[in-house]
Length: 530
Image (cartoon, rainbow, N blue to C red; front, side):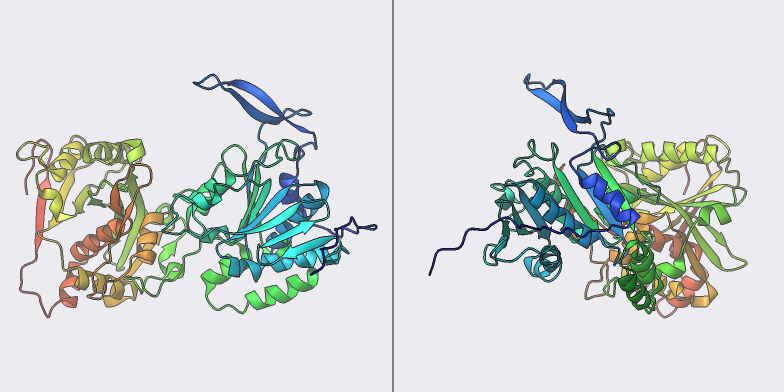
């Protein structure tokens, strides 16, 4: 074979890129200059670490801005032009700077070659570059090299059991990176790859820059860039930015009209909200979930607590005492006259707040109810195994004695109301599904901010015998193993079986032996009875 011809620079390079206002907002965050004033970025000495090594922080030498974009999310509706902008950014950066290494990544190389890689090649040809004259593609190595020795490299980012720490990224050195459909990729993979953005960084962008794109998702991407667990807007960390997109932000009018019409044909409202309008408050459907009749578009209500909570009526607190990943409490009220069950809030006792223990979470709950001036009384219910004494406590003390003692020193007037034993898991899950479907005239409404309960209802899978598949996961920071899903849904089960017990007895009447299986207790102030 003959020697490959040397690549040459184009004589008349024509870059045709007319971004929409939203694309331009994202574009400025991706450039080497300050997005506020266009000034040059410099590194400022801010001190020394414990080993006396100098530490630097980027800032704009013109306006003094210290929040320099490094990790940027372009997220939202499908068809907004996110992937196209990512392709333009990678190609234009390689043309602007010689000898840089730009990475384009997705979960698998197959999906990458079928999507963003094609867009990159389309952009290059539109700008008048000719293959094997101005650039060369190596499909085996997954590279596209320009005449100035800048290169775009394809990368797959799927988690692999044989490489849990992504050591395959270890020898990589890159300058910039764009990751498409980041919702399919783990946060650890992103952070490891980001640490490899160091090739000619100082001579070009001054800071590492990574662009992430995705449609709305419910995983770590939403929690880090968009919304916290309560649905409130996230304040991004320094150097991290989020730019929301909808299909209406695509500058191609013809494409926008055609694609909008296609998305409007989607019958599932939640999917349409996510893909057409970029709504992050959607709920996915999961045919394998044990709560198959839960429907987010029907059962999740925005601002439910503000609409229905009545501080003069009894408040039900449902407790689950697992300490990992958190201790969990559901708050609910029942309108028996209209057969409506309202789940108005979830309270999580997290390890990082040192609230994943009964005394701390009970104190937090007491103070919360005092602040909200709750005077209608409080029911305490939940996992019956909470009556068991811990080896770390004295005789007569258990989770429920702690809660009752904490609640019983004021106007809360707590009452303990417990099932004698846990209802059969298969039957209670079937009962919950029938209630979601309107069994016996009941309606269940859940506040949209109950994110962990919603995750349970979506992702809790079913074993072949009809029980909950409570698979364990390991916390990478602590090494603690815990059941990821099921804690809040267990609370829901106990709530339904006790407080809708007439319907519960009717549902399981074929096996009911007349034993109610319920333990009740009067209000307790200085003691404990059950």
